[in-house]
Image 1 (cartoon, rainbow, N blue to C red):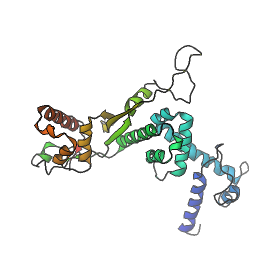
Image 2: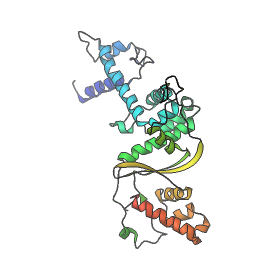
Image 3: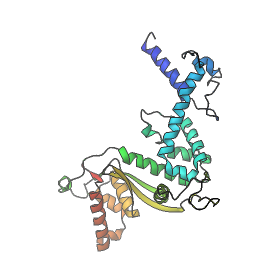
Image 4: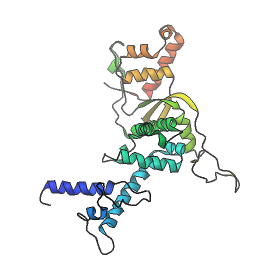
Amino acid sequence: MRSTRDLKALQSAMAAAVMRPLTPESRMQRRWADGRPAAAVVGEFIKPNDRLSALERIEIYNRMYWFRLLDCLYDDCPGLRAVLGVRKFMRMAEAYLVKYPSRSFTLRNLSRRLEPFIREEPQLTSPYTALAADMARFEWAQIEAFDGPSRPALEPDDIGNVHPAQLRLRLQPHLTLLALQYAVDDFVVAAKRGALRAEASNAPVGGSAGSRPKRVVRPQRTRIYLAVHRRDNRVFFKRLDPAAYRLLDALQRGETLARACAIALPRAAAASPAWQRRIRDWFKNWAELGWFCRP
């Protein structure tokens, strides 16, 4: 190494070797991207030893890297795994990591682009593409809620003298609002309770020997609205009334309180005591949950 440029070239070569996709047999590819034998390429910067060739040595790290990434996606996406079945999920996960390789220092961000990838490559999740995309959004929102940033909660004195036409309420950055086509929340709760099994698995769930295994009962299409958030260092998800979702969504986009109410609520809400009580209860609950942060 004569310079930092040489060191960078070595690091880039090593990263390229370690991050190359594996073969269908989970081995290192024997040809480099330009067609040269991979053994010759890695032999330029990896020495053999008395037991392993240069290619065999780097293959250990190549396989270890991919198995680690796939394990992380497996653990981060139990709902998506239940929707697709393990085999189909793993094929989708490998294709995802080829198209969107890890570019972060932390594995926490590995599934950030999973939902758009599912929509870009629907053949990998068909016939459950819409459900899979909803599930990927829901599970990423939980990651964001788990360790996303949190700001000091709003205090009454922060807004006491501000007119609603000027007041902008900010939501906690770890809170995600979701408008979904499937009841993925109920599905995941059932999965975590052990009521669901991956369709690709034939393992029996209780009952006598030889009894037929339970199959995945996927949710039917139904519009739901969710808030995924953190409280006391735990992740929660809460169903929202459609009007409540629209109101929070408008606030999150930076609308004033008055404008958000006008967007979200029926015109009769302003004069209806029932609507006024409902809105008051919403804001009371959201404030108690700490969803609003100080400006």
